[in-house]
Amino acid sequence: MEEDLGHHHKSLDEDLPSHLLQDIQDLAVLSSKLDDSPSLDNNLNAEVNLEPQGNTPIERGTTNRESFSSPKTIARDLLSSQDEAARRSSGSTDDEVWELRKELSQLKTQMQVMKEGYDTEVKNLRDAVSKLLVTQSKKDLKKKFARGSHEAVFYSGHSAGIYAVQYEEELVMSGSGDKTIRVWNARSKEVVHVLSGHQSGVCCLHYDKDRHRIISGSWDKTIKIWDLQTGEHQTLKAHVNGVRCLQVRGQMMVSGASDKIIFVWNLAQAQCELILKGHEGGVYCLEFRGNTLVSGSADKTIRVWDLETGKCSKVIKGHTGEIFCVKFNRNLLLSGSADKTLRMWDLESGDCLKLMLHPEPVYTCDMTENFIWSGCGDPYLRMFDVKSGQCLRVIKAHADGIYSLQLQADKLITGSSDKTIGVWRFLDDFNRL
Image 1 (cartoon, rainbow, N blue to C red):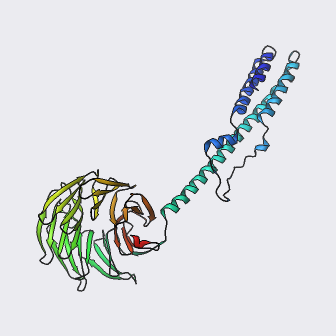
Image 2 (cartoon, rainbow, N blue to C red):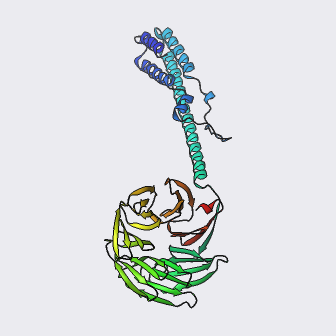
Image 3 (cartoon, rainbow, N blue to C red):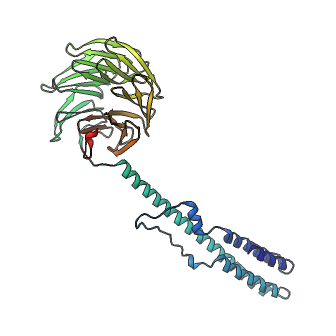
């Protein structure tokens, strides 16, 4: 077409007025661009290869392609106009030139409108395809990350975030930034104890079911032992900064604080028997089994201690942020960090075996032989496969970040900065956990 139009342009170069010739040339270029452009269907096929799912409609916008003439039709009209112009050129009057210019202008406008119409329809179709892809992607994610059935019961009453939770003997216990510890009856959801006495937020606790007592640590630098039968408490003081973590086994307790020191306590005598130093930052998390103690610190390292000798046997490095949680099971060690990763280590060699990425700092984790659960600064619980490190399930558990969690038999307990505690029961094969 461009060749034909060019031929007519050459025949008119000397006969038509220059301003009229320019209009015809502009119109020829526009027609050529439209005619050479890929078809609408080809454009879409180049964008995406998509088969509609089910009966999902694709809105094609309001443009009616049939209302426009094709580029070839308009080009033929244009050529006819040029032929007419050639026939009239030798003796054309001003009125005839004006009429011809008017006719060409109308054709030019029609072609421009047609082009805009096609562009609009292409945009509408692309938008519809994008929406369909997003919808389908969300459905796929929902199937992938919410497999299995679950139910949750929530407990509220605190006026600040929840930093420690425990479930034991049908009791739900929580420590909060509001300086209190609350104890609920899990069946009735009634509050049976509100323990007040700390002068700052409670960030760790342990329920001793054999002695029916709760041991708590606080940013007020103290550890308190609460007798749930009498409501009275005993205060232990040794740390010079906020107590961030504690673990209890029988009458032995280990505590860590922002003062970089770990204390090993004899609870029967309420005395400190051993002091462990080595971390260069606050001690934020602890886990011990038998004589092996693992600690995580703001100095970005994990230390492994022998509680019998009081010596540090290993320093594990790899995290690039503060370490907020540690758990270990046999020879596998887990750690969560401000660097937004959950890492699995070989406790014996100190080698990193798996790295599990999160969108926010990882504050809490727990594990069994088969699965790992984690909570971070977003509202979602995540479950990973121990062997592969792949994320198997993501569940929106709260309205804000998850600071604490605990696996207990067939339940998972979570505490969040949204001031609530969740007790989760999974109705699929949770026994595998």
